[in-house]
Picture (tube, helix red, strand yellow):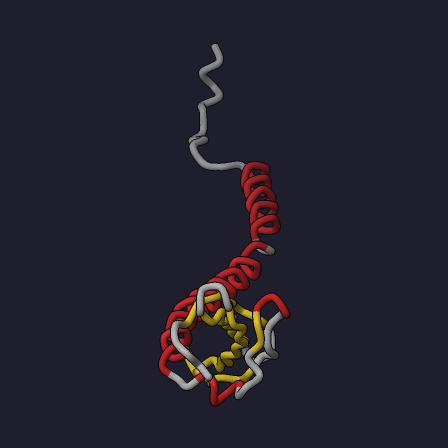
Length: 140
């Protein structure tokens, strides 16, 4: 009785389904798009911190070898009175970025050690990393 109307091949997508899928895809992209610049910023900051932390150990090693008294003279004070002013130690270039190492020292009279505060600064004079270490020996 109803054999007159043959079913046409309907295995494709309708226009409404295609428009709906494009709209959903557009919303997903609009939500995820602002994340990518943030991820790039995090990656750059993490890379900078990694380089600075590796540089800290190198600077600490060099600080023990350099004649620190020649940098500070007789201005090394006791730690209970504060610490000396930052003194420029050396420039470093790693991964096409310039870093500057600055140190300050104070003397721990109780244990005959010198507390050294090492700071690593980036190009824009921004503190990237810092660390404390102790140096043995008579610096004066």
